[in-house]
Each structure stands twice: as structure tokens, then as C-alpha cells.
Image (cartoon, rainbow, N blue to C red; front, side):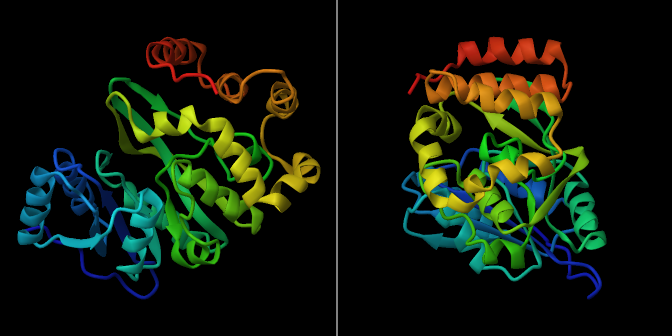
Length: 301
């Protein structure tokens, strides 16, 4: 029987984990176990996003038999599946977990405590560990930077978000990839603040072609779409540059990189390397990531 901790006192925000699942029967049980084992969790829901794989359907049925709540909807993509999970819960804080990823012990408690202590924050996140076809620790941004977010997404896909801020910003709306980047832009555009908690929060699985790879292949088109969806955010770039907490070398390099006559995909890769160097995340790790990306390179735009 999978048990979810009873609600805490009224002084602490309640926590919900939402796990979208589309034909992820092989990995979703581990994701569920990692969430259910958290020492601060009030609601857990798996959203079946119109799975067609018989083995996945059977796995979800078995999860229900153990007490896991499963919400079902017609296939609509990751964003809509997450929002179906949000609608099925009521907790103050929401954490989206992909069905092939795994939360690490104590992660939700650390994130929720940060939100509890800082009512002015809309979201908090940590670092993540890649496993599968690539293996390295990914350090993330320290803040939700209104300027940097218009150039690159240095936040993880999974973060603990305050429900009120999530709904006010429209939630995960974009379809076809970069759902998280779109939401972070929406929050930044509204003046919301976010912060990193210095710990590894979850394990991010990479196994061959994945939605992120598909998103990268369409990076140029999707980035242009983001510009049309967040006009004011991009219009305020100059003022946001002066207020940005990003390292000065990065604030100098990104505008130059994005002015180069390169494909959007190549600009993204160079900007990612510049971000890594500017934040002093280690040249050895950067070299390892470049070699890994070369083995799993996405086609240019």
C-alpha cells in the first residue's frame, strides 16, 4: 500500500506531486516510489495521458490497487497532463515529476521549507543528476533572472511551485516542448521570484531520443513562439539587464552570441557553454558534456 503523509499544520504549506504518464509503464513505478517515500508529501497523483501501451495500462491499474490515485485524460501532451494533475489536487505547493525521473530522499522537505520561510518566492528548485545515456551533475541557476530567462533556461524542468503563482501565470500551457521554460518566462514577466536550494533534488533519466531532444530540434521555432507569448518580458530586456544578477561576463556574452549569424541550435549550444563557464561550473565537466552532446547531437535548425 502506498501511503501519503497526512496534512501538516496550517502553518506549513501542503505539498502535491504530479506525475504525467504516457506509455511509461516501465519507469513510472520507480517515480511513484520515490515520491511516496518523501518525508513531506500530502497528495500524489499519476496522470494517465491517454496511454495506449497495454503494459502501461496494466501497471497503472496495479498502482491504483496499491492506493495510488490515477487521473485519466485523452492524450494532450505534457503540459495539459500536468495541469490535469494540478486540478486533481489542492495542496499549496506543486511539484511535477516526469514518469521516468526519481526524487531523492528529503528533497521535497528542503524545497517546501524554503517556500514556507520565504512567502515572497513563487518557486524553488535544486540541482539534478543525469543518468542513463549520460551521467553528470547539473548545477542550476541561483535565481529566476528576468533577463537571462529571455536567452536561456538555466532552471530544471521540475521545481516546487506555489499553486497561487502557478495558476495566476496560466500554468503549463505550451504544447510540444519547453513547457517549463514558457512557465518560468510567464512567472518572470509577472515579477515573481524564485531561488535555488543547494542540494540535488532528483535524478533525470536520459535514454536515447526523448522529448527534450525533440524540443531541441525545434529550438528556433519554439524560441520565436516564446517571444510572441511574452512580448513585455522581451521588451524589458534592457532594463532587466541592469537589474540582472547573472555574472557580468555572461551579460556581455549572451547578446553577442545571439547576434551571430548561426542557427538557433548552434547559438543555444554556445550560450550554454558560456553560461557554464561564467558560473565556474568546471571545465572538466564542460568538456565531458560537449563530448556527450556530440554523441547525441540534435540536427541543426
